[in-house]
Image (cartoon, rainbow, N blue to C red; front, top):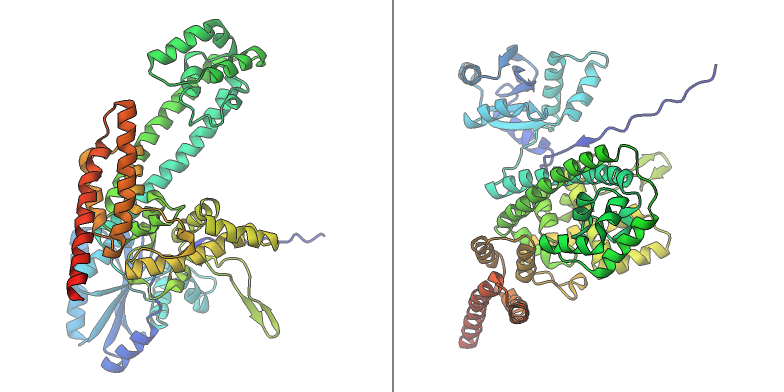
Length: 525
């Protein structure tokens, strides 16, 4: 009988805590209070209830495994019972060890944290490994509690570093925006499929079907190649002018040529037309929501040092906001390797005796969201940043894999980002030659997103607070050039320009601050 080889399933493990193991801290506590005066409240959470026990360092049960419902009354009773046992057993140190289980662990964790207990998190991967040691073929809540105790003794009870309101909002809004972007991409594929059945080859008339201002309006109005010919170029152009849509005659000519040569559409053309227009309505609504979310992300990003990262060509507000939300404050990281270590942007290694394979695939146990944010930025830099693009071209000539090129770009960016965020300074590096002015880039972002004048001025004022004074001169020069450009556009087009009216006021503030600093330096000399 032929043997069938089994493939090991790839397991994607997520690690969210940037804290290192607490073995050293635990050892110091044990020496200080003694093994019989240090205890752990081990909690194995589920959706509506949790299993818990109180056990000392040596494994003696002070409270046997018990089930608690996730209700306010029962959680308060749980905390009171633990406090009573702490007094009776004369415990000096109590750590609450909670297994991370999606979002289900949060009610118990918050209850103990609000009561003043030291609360720590154990990753399910650690729980599983320590359960397999003693109970390889048995998985119950009680065996998981024992595994939690073993993991806590080994130092795998980790502290989750707190996030302030700005970083929590960035994380939630950036993840929601990413979800909407992915759904919109799926909608585009569906629309393109149904549109091709109704109007075969129509999308090839445009460089980008979604960026063209006339592609979808004409498809909605006509629906079939024959309908385009029946309407004719004159009425088609008049309908676009009535809708105030700008177009070129050459584009209309290209559409008419396509209509004469297009094959016969599907037999259920009317139904496909109905389906894709409905999907397009959904896509447009999501696009407006994405635009609103990006404005909100910009309003929060300007209050964090991560705003300075958009001075690097190839990085804009959405990517910087997504990185800030997943990464958190730079104070949580001791060095750049701590960032890439948490994200798992380093190769796995297998070594046994004289066999050493140091450059394997990226490690599986990592914070996948942070890794994704870093690699998306690496993609943008390799394509849009001259220095990163030149480095990537050199690596390609040596036969380097594209994935390895992205990983190297992410590592380089992480080192640069650490310098910018830790020192809160504008980056001086070949990748910023020429560098983008942050305020000018932020102004253009708000102009594209049709931001209100009030929010625009608020964001620009908040952004100034993030700059070191050494950067004021460069920012003022860039804003002056942008203000002059907008003023010239107003003279030519005779249209309103709120951004052009707001920038001079901000430019005046930057210029005064720079002049005052220069005067103080001269006086000191």
